[in-house]
Image (cartoon, rainbow, N blue to C red; front, side):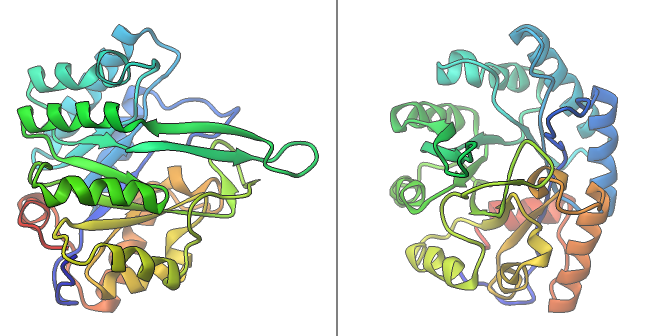
Length: 298
């Protein structure tokens, strides 16, 4: 891991889709609006979801349209979406990636290596039920092969230390395209999918001790790294400022907060910009963000 100067530029990601059960899904126009608002506020990366009720063909068409329109307004943005429904990693879950590449608008792709169970509290208050995310390692390897063929940067999700160990093994072989980054997810106090739903959590809690543990594993790895709290407010935590002080980057936006803040996407981005200014780090957007991520600066 490269611990850069505290004055190095910081990259901000905005995860713009609320994912609240019972609330209307964002339309394509709303996705484009929230993305451009976040970018105007200082974000350099946008993560969004799609209308999962559509057919696979409809979902692909929506994703291509949304990302094309965002790139028209901000040609140098990194933008990537969630997975489609299905089991097969490339033929189904990532069926949108070849279409985005063909349209010339594939700037980044998500990869969560390893299968992670997220405990959900049952009526007895225990995490006796779960949802599962991620990709088994054989499937994750397929995504890396696709990314290498197309030169697509990967946003590499880490939900627990075993995910990071897999990433580090591939990074040591130089198998990730330039612009790829390690995304450290910390387990918050709420469950994604609702408004302040309680949860047993996953992985490591958002503490400086947890962050230091991850960074100790990353010694010698030059991939840039970014932090997020899934089910909490990153900017209210102790790890936000420490991340900036150690040369890392921040992911904000309404998706990850699980309703724990009333701030809009743009407001969370602007708050992250303000914290970066307090620490003394300029915010990288456009070509500068490309230089930060593709140059290997953390």
